[in-house]
Length: 307
Ligand SMILES: Nc1ncnc2c1ncn2[C@@H]1O[C@H](COP(=O)(O)OP(=O)(O)OP(=O)(O)O)[C@@H](O)[C@H]1O
Ligand SMILES: [Mg+2]
Image 1: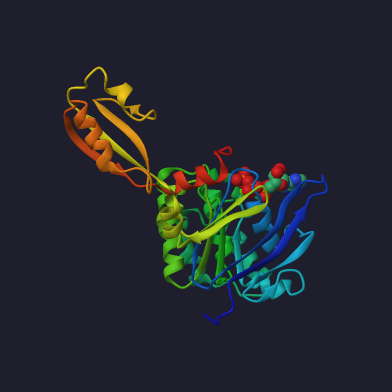
Image 2 (image 1 turned 135 degrees about the vertical axis):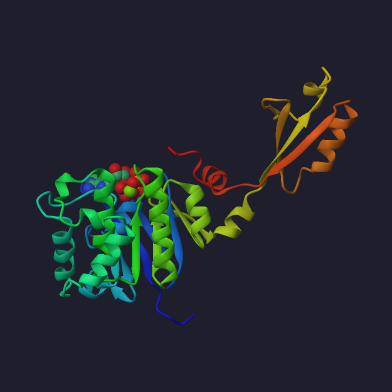
């Protein structure tokens, strides 16, 4: 546990010229080798935080380090350790894909490593676009190039700011496979996404930002376990008329005779509910439960936000 953290963020604050406080004293660390989710509703400050790491936003106060290198005082080293795939598509329309990649490598004083370029192009399904100019690529293809670009200097820490926003299902799956491969190869991955089921399946730990503040930071497992509710659904054959009146007030009628209840993990008992149903003369045909997912937890924590 003595290894230098991949990211150390300490009391980071950003007030934009407009006076808007996008980051309001955020502190947390990401360990080497983690697959880490940075979540939050629109406008929470996720991109501001990521852009501060990349030197694209100058923090108002506080500090951030990448692999022990301060992003302001020691920015060269910090940037070498970091590959950021930005949320916005920024590119020079006249360069070809390969030129973009070669320039990026050159920026870090590296010789454009042809085998590495080819490998990344291949992995991202870009091989046949290598000599196409950026302006001739579709949005999804441009996003792939941004990802390839961020990896040219083989940074130990890779930050993906909504890499799957507006991309089709196939590319989304390709990107997740690729992110998993990078993680398996030892890279630390920090991911922002609004696809919470993907964050849930990929990430070891989850941080939730809201209004520039860290709301929670926990392992995905603990976060899910901390949610107080679970759902139970029961399919009823014959439904006596007085049933709805005698049941919990929060009964939700679904189709095909299914009903849903939200039960508090500690205060409500499944046995009580079933007994109540039987006593009312209902015929129980089938039963299923649904454990909370990251979306339930997220909505509970950020109060519905604008997700
Ligand atoms: N250059 C800027 N000047 C002024 N305000 C900005 C600037 N960039 C972002 N903001 C504001 O800062 C807040 C945080 O924005 P940010 O882009 O960091 O959010 P986000 O969490 O990445 O949201 P999203 O999920 O929509 O990408 C927002 O209120 C946004 O309008
Ligand atoms: Mg953003």
